[in-house]
Length: 164
Image (tube, rainbow, N blue to C red; front, top):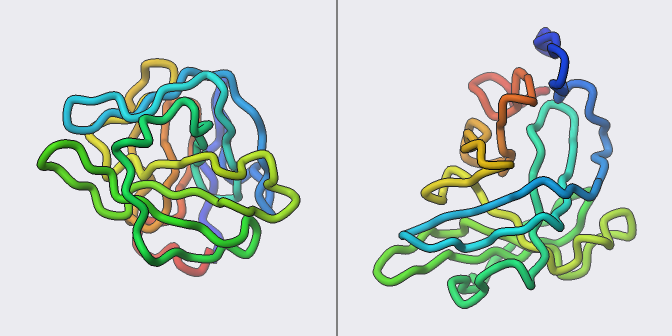
């Protein structure tokens, strides 16, 4: 059963107005990921994926990611819209965040612009920021959405949302 969307205020977006299949759009917002005292990624040349009931997922160009901190892991997943994903552990000194980032090396044509771009689970990192606002991770741990003040839900991932 679809939940009742929270009405957005001026300057906000409702995730219930996002499309399905998802939409890809470029963003010039400042995006930053921090882990174990390091800036893992920082860009103003990212993309965001917008999908019904999900906060945006942000993708970083590989040139703006400290890839020396990424270790590819053996297994991935497949998204019906974006294709086959490859996952990374984020490793800094003695700290490891397991399967904390992912990429689509050969995404479907609709998502070709993010081929090789890297996304991060904000709940696995020490902090993630959009324009200096610290984000909240999308609930549930399975999804990688970044919640900011300008996005309203309810968000998929909370208890009872599997059928949304």
